[in-house]
Length: 222
Image 1: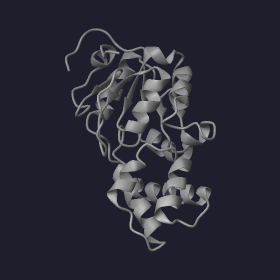
Image 2: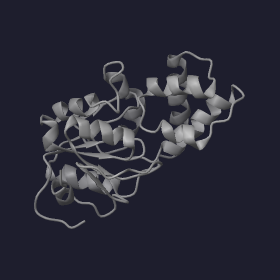
Image 3: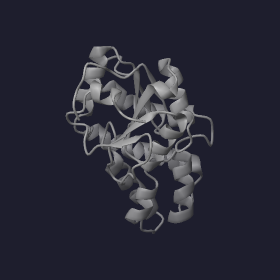
Image 4: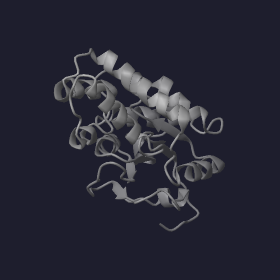
C-alpha cells in the first residue's frame, strides 16, 4: 500500500487474531475443555468459531464437542484458559502496534471492538500506552444475541468514537468480524489469520499490517 497525506476519521479494531495473535490460545483452550469430556476438537470446528460471540461459541461447543456445562461455565473456562496463556506472552500481530502508534500520533480515534469480555480485553489494553483506545466494545457489553457477525458491535464502536459507521475503517481478520463490520456500514481492511477471507465490496484484503499507514486506511475503497 502507498501512503498519502490523508487519514481516516476513526478506526475500529478487532482484537483476537487482528491486534493480538491469540487465536491459537483460544483453540488450545477449546481443546482442553472438549478433551475433558473425552472428545476431540478438530480444526474445522475450531476454525468455524473464530470471531464468534463467546455465548455463541459456548453453544457451538455444547453441540459439537459434547461439553456438558452451562454456557456461562464454558465462557468462564475459555476466558481463564486464554488469560493464563497471555500472562506468559502477549503475541502481538506484526505491524499492529506501529499502525496504532501512528493513528494515535495523528489524533485519529481508535476503538476496540471485540467479542472477548471486558476483563480479558482490559489485559491487552493495559499492555498498550494509556489512551491508545478511546473506547472498548466487548462481548459482554453487547445486547444478548447481537454479537458478531451481527452489525451491532461495530455500530456501537462507531457511536463510541463519535462518527457514523460509514466514516470509520474497521480492521478484522475473520469472516465473522468482516460481516459484522460491513453490515454496520464500515469500510474494512481484512488481514486473514486462521481463516481465509473472500473478496467482496467494502473489503480490502492485505496479507499483513506491516507497512500499512493511516493514509492507506483513508484510501480504502467501498
